[in-house]
Amino acid sequence: MNPDSASIARYGEKEKTELFMFDFIRLPAMAQDVAGFYLARYRDRKKVVSLEVFLDNAQMEFADAVTISLMSDLLCEVQKVNVHPGSARAMRNDVITIIAREY
Image (cartoon, rainbow, N blue to C red; front, side, top):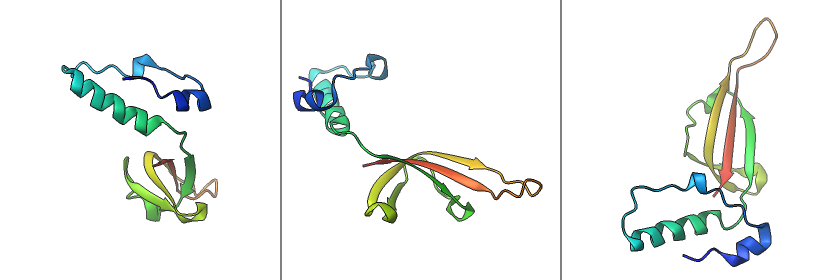
């Protein structure tokens, strides 16, 4: 499949071949479908948001869909969730850091 020339013109070529090794692809039609999916998914740059939230969001997991209403109802997919335990001695609350990518 041909690279997306409009995306390359806008952002430059950013090929990382080590990220796209698919030994399970055996047929040319399957390779074209997978290439089309990745070209569509990564054609435009997406916003990446990092949020610190409290423990009431502890149920967040990788690949959850969330809407961030403070950013004009931005629909995102959770990429990473980190829990930072608090400390009574240091007067610091428990915090959860969520990194999400725009769909």
